[in-house]
Picture 1 (cartoon, one colour):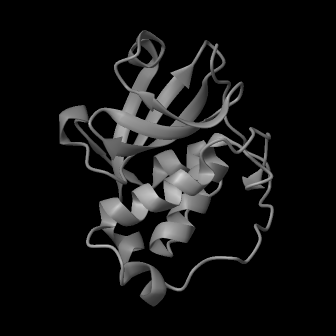
Picture 2 (cartoon, rainbow, N blue to C red):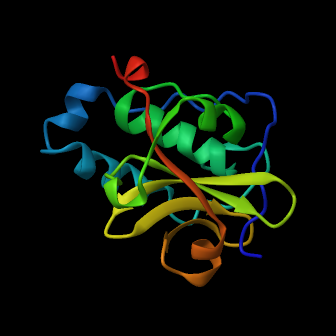
Length: 156
């Protein structure tokens, strides 16, 4: 398959090179534009199980790193924990920044990505590294598990 299940590895500290919110938000109008800009900087980063930095990242590490960089929000590090903090929504209600989860093979492992709009999501593929995929691709359509928004309590 294109991806394998995600890490539940212990936290690894990522480099402290984030941009201050005032610098970033001054040149963008929306959450979606901030997200797109941060996502572009991650495309092509190689997959590394347990990774959380641009030298190598897994799917939940990518979600956590992008949320921290784009929105200054600290999310849990594993897909299981991420599943526990979402408010499940219908797929047709997805907005940029929402999380999409996939059940991989029969491993009972989950894969997670961030929805970007227009049916596309960013994720860390175990084969191709950080990339943007279409939710309508047969591989993902067959494995779709849940979509969700981060619960409001975390967005203060």
